[in-house]
Length: 411
Image 1: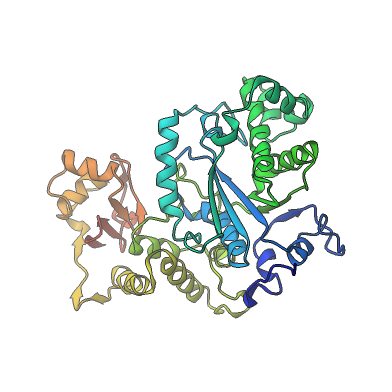
Image 2: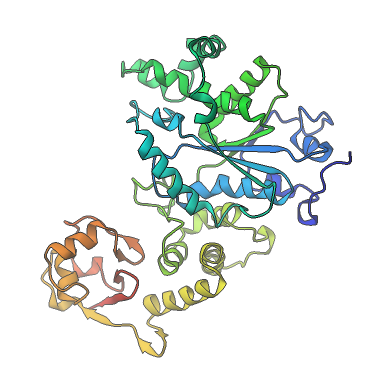
């Protein structure tokens, strides 16, 4: 059989390197398809099986998660089979990577509910429609059936010393923070997933190298052809410093409304805007505008188009212009609220009521804050006790409740 035919946009395999942090093993001068992923892609006579596993331990997908998913989509577009592995069994343990303590174990019902929410959110990223391009699998299919003898066989492939070299375990051991034996099983079970799926390539973040390498070790143990590991970088959050994380509040959810998403992306720090373009879009990197502000606008328009469509993205761009620069939308001026009516320091709780965005400063306002309906310049504010010390902290910013209620804060 002839090698798999990729579409013309993938013919040079430039898509493979875009944004990629590491491929292992990697011998770019070799023609051996077991040492050079490019050669395996070029020489393969059938679609490769590309594995990406997620543990549905949470419910909200953000743009940081999309980085690896977009690489999985690139493999799909090149004619290969993406395997989206739902770790419904391993999620009950939780990946210990980078954790300073054991993760809370979830029930099977919680995991199942999270998985369905996750799948709904990744639909705009992956190709769910082309036959043969996507398999959705659950690792309970095989992990729940392992007997004690098979589990002992897995345990016998790795030493305690190897496990303690894993990120997080060594630190916890030094600090005498408990490491439970079931946590040692996590990378072995993730590795066994590669055996069960006969994976050719496994994708993950740079913090997943240990787990991906275990998959290669187990494939070797079971006499399979070894997978390649492909690592993608961890996306920096909207603060431009720390990794994107819901707990840090520096994230952009893939299901955020178009205006909120556009507003946040338009403010991407100059130092990371090129990285965002590289990891979150297909825009040619050598054709970007020279002006950083224009790059931010182009980035925001492109990403919002992916999740909401081009028309919604253009509408969000116009609305953002109205909100932040005093433009107009539908010939109506953006409402303004004078902070002279407020005594500072002031809780946002009371400003919402004084401005008329909320009817009172009572329970309903607190509920909207805690529910994430309140945004300040596009950033979600959920703290009921959020305090502004002086008017200068708020001047020129847009205070928004829901999708249609907003005011610009002025003197």
